[in-house]
Length: 455
Image (tube, rainbow, N blue to C red):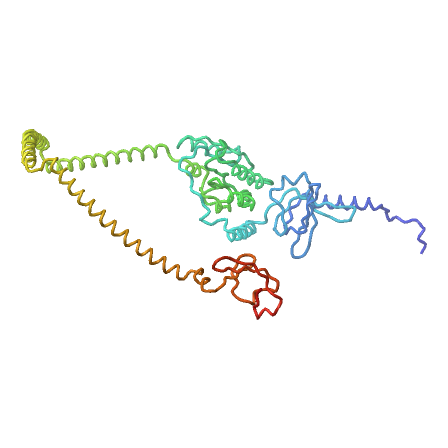
């Protein structure tokens, strides 16, 4: 067949085909809602997010442009089942079709609750919900901090309730309470309040985290892990008041107290002034009654003790009378005592010898003693002379001079030391010979030392 002959089959460029396919898809589907599990999630520095949605039988690629991220409604994560809203379009460079997502929702409450329960168990195992971590709410805070939306009835209910019960300053940290980015801002607000130093005038004594009611999806920011961890780490006593009384979020487990409504949270934060006044009045009445009973009992004990006490004025009069009597007796007794002592002295004085007689007797006794002492001293001297003479004769008898007189000689070396043996004398040594009438010098001969011959 001749392929060059004319034909009525239209001819398209690649770009024309891609554009036609794109128009066909977008025209056929328009805006769609797709249910599936997020997978292959990738965030790029440009701010765009690329992912895929899958189920048991297929996978659909998707993209979230940076401009739509803040309006998604939830934070996309791998593994969660969602319903994605957007438009089906194509990516011509790769000949792929994809879903441009501008809204995400959790796929039913069952999936949400399962995800929340899994997170609750994991945080509970870490001890974030332990009762030991709970702090006591102060009785009367000086400043109440609130993390909530600045719009709506929640903050107004809290302020009205506090003003009615016990007016206290309220410091609001405004945050979005749902939607993309709400969880991050709530967590930052709690952490910022907690980071204020003690003594800072802006540091609250109690913190309320609150929002009104809503669906499970609306309350998901308060089930976010970052919010729960911020509440558990907060150093300020924290009251959670999220949703209605039947609503429970994970921040309720991490908070120090959970209130069913924002109004109830305000009631927990500050006491009722009227109730306090009633309590004070009641305590005052009880205190007055107790004091009255104590006074009555004390008066009764005093009267009982008074009956057992002696008559003090009578005792005082008797004491004064005894004092006067003692003074009079003392005044009379002293002259009599002195007179008696003088009589005794006079009687003894007559019996004492005259001093001259005592002196004469003493002189005689001293003279006799002196004579006796002189005689004894002379006798002792005679005995001492005799003993000394005997000792001198004995000493002279053993003197070396007596030995020399009998013909012996004392030999000394040149240094004057006695020589007692011949072996110690060297030939030619100078020696001195001491006789009874003088000494002579000699020199030892050169013969054998054993002979001891001296010249």
